[in-house]
Length: 289
Image 1 (cartoon, rainbow, N blue to C red):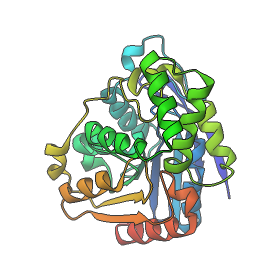
Image 2 (cartoon, helix red, strand yellow):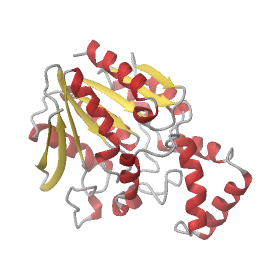
Image 3 (cartoon, rainbow, N blue to C red):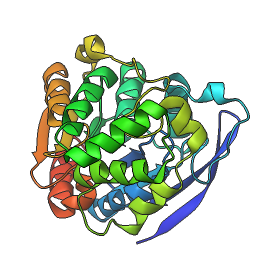
Image 4 (cartoon, rainbow, N blue to C red):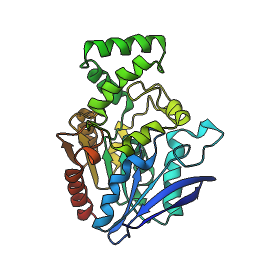
């Protein structure tokens, strides 16, 4: 499969990207999670290139190989929405099929609320429209962890010692249940987590996946979802840290959207059930290409 990579100048910053395939049926633009991760864990989306789509992945501002700004005030959803739009234009992607994972799903929804005229379809994978609802669900899942793990989480969260090795071990128990259930994790998943941008993640999210105390903590666009008219596919996993409750609510509020929950997956169905995931996405894109 042909792969191209380089840098695009977007809003005054250089963003690293990779492209796969040719746009016989159209363009797919993938938005990674975090906020602050890298595009690498999304590489399974390149499978769509063999079905006639040009797939473009990139590292968002301050992430991965992309430029890091001096001003952390840029680390807000509003900036990243404009970044997606400028990147789309700079890369001549036309009206792409947007696929967002986790925070990337939130970003895809935010983009659709402003620029849906410039996209063909919306697909979210473990995406979210309401951070408060997502956090409530995460807290519910935490309470189902082993007692010793819960005790360690409470202890070090109370102390604010998020870097303590015992706390990190406890967090990993949660991640292996609700982030990625494969053992071992794919190298690309490990890479994206190991290279997460602490400035971006810390500013927008917080110290870990279920402690969201950054600037997105009150983000909730439930009341605006009815304005989204592009074809939408809501995907999630049975054990997803962005729980099926969130996915069902998202589906309920976006008129005409489709919903699929993968029974063996958590947050990364494109790894955990890769074949079934691709079949579902290819079918959806094919109906709207």
